Length: 252
Image (cartoon, rainbow, N blue to C red; front, side, top):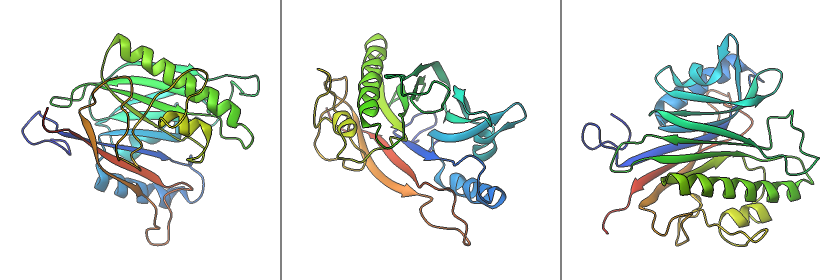
């Protein structure tokens, strides 16, 4: 039984979460406890983690979420195993990755400048979800690269959506201010390179365009920061997380 289940096997809402885990830095033993307890309370259905560690003998995502999630780790990782990962309550299919090396300044050895895209078998009435995990270049002075990476991600997701239509959910660590060109592009407030899209921003779920589909039957019912307060003096990480609830739109 999932967060949005109303009858056995049916899912009327999906809880998504994105967060930077900050590797195992800081007081990891205490941070681990805070994260595990918080994730149990939040009970997310779909998760996008950045700076998550996976090595031959340790999987940070499974350690924190439990073994019942379907987990996919991106191939591009730092020497210590840090990188991007996704986890889902339901099976994950056709997991594909792209390196967003849009200029020579984007280092192919870094975990940033990458996109992972996967299809998730969310049960009806919601149905399949196309999840895009976007991690652009984070460096100051790299807004040009972030613009190009946003366009590359949008075009790739659009092509995936054409091949197999599904609800599109874009998560990640965008490393940019809301007024930046890349974020304005993704949220439909400007075009870039002859391309335009209009993702609904979960922070501002007012009227807006839908992405790659004339009608999107999902609506945003809530969005909030998580892990944004210390627990017994321990912060979960160096970034807050964000969780949003997506539900089926009632009516025609």
